[in-house]
View 1 (cartoon, helix red, strand yellow):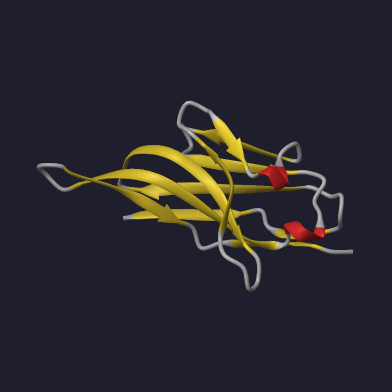
View 2 (cartoon, helix red, strand yellow):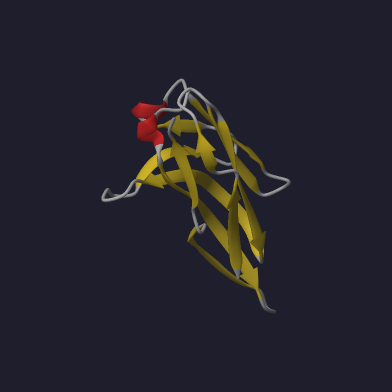
Length: 125
């Protein structure tokens, strides 16, 4: 099985910074795109940013210029550096990854998306 474990959330004042991390573990054969989504109370879960295996990134318009996504393929980890945080960035942030697993012998390959458990980010004075 696969686990995505997020860390780095918390309470920060407006204008402050946080860095989220998401580490993947388990019977992983390959990781394709990785990304971050967020969900505020009463709202749908929206894409914040994603990054391909070769490092091509895209961002929601609301975070362009403030957030930076990166990944370390060797550590199977994706990061989200969040600067100039605003109260409207308050949400639960979820990590997502497109992963192929390899299990058993002969090996069985299976590819699907996985989600982390979420980490709370609160921006408030």
